[in-house]
Every structure is written in structure tokens, then in C-alpha cells.
Image 1: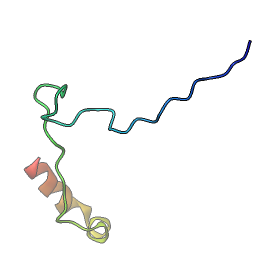
Image 2 (image 1 turned 90 degrees about the vertical axis):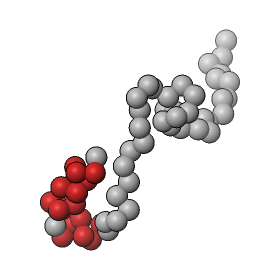
Image 3 (image 1 turned 180 degrees about the vertical axis):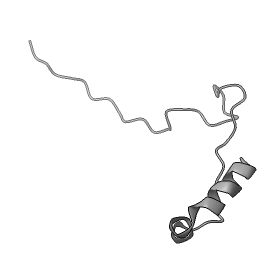
Image 4 (image 1 turned 90 degrees about the horizontal axis):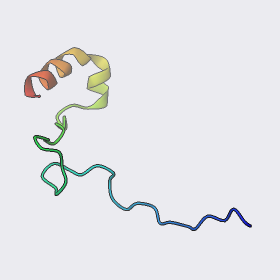
Length: 57
């Protein structure tokens, strides 16, 4: 008897469905993207960024 394991391919898609995709949870929505802020700005003064994200979210 051997402990051989049959190889299985790695998943090619994300584990959770995207909103609007078949099988997506009801009422789901895409995550907001803050492409208007840079990492240096966020490190320099994060509070205005957080306030804007909260207002937009």
C-alpha cells in the first residue's frame, strides 16, 4: 500500500464569485477602489484619506 496522492490542478479562478457573477451572494457589491491616493500621501497624512473613503463608501 502506498500513500500516493493523485495530482490535482491548481484553481484558475478566484475562490469567491465576483458581484453580479452566477453564484454571487445576493446584495453583494464591488469593493471601492481608491486610485486617487498614493502610498506616500497615505503615509504622510492618512486621516483625510480615511474620511473620504468613509464618505464614498
